Amino acid sequence: MQNSIPRQKILTKKVDNIKIEKIKAKLHNFFAVKYEQQMDAEEIIDRLNIALSFGKTITIQTRVNEYSDNVVDRTGKLIQNTDGNLFIQENDTLIKISPALIQYVY
Image (tube, rainbow, N blue to C red; front, top):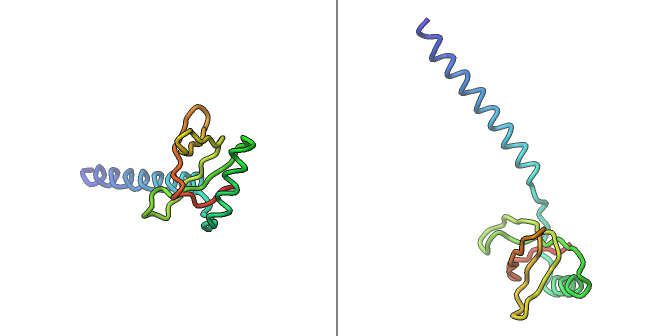
């Protein structure tokens, strides 16, 4: 009888680990961002100018930081302030966009 308690804990822990791994895999697939090739600077500038001029909703893919290949997609209205800084308005949130980290503009 004493051996069954630790064995039950081990089995429960294995089942919990399997459940966690399945959840992680589903989340990864759900949040996965399709990595696009780096656009050239002229095309990025042209697309940003069009988005600013017409106030259309766009999606900008940016790298997480300058040393990483991890990317994130931001979708919303592009805004430029008087200092020339770029922001994207997602719902009610303004997110600053660093031009050096822009990978692709949809």
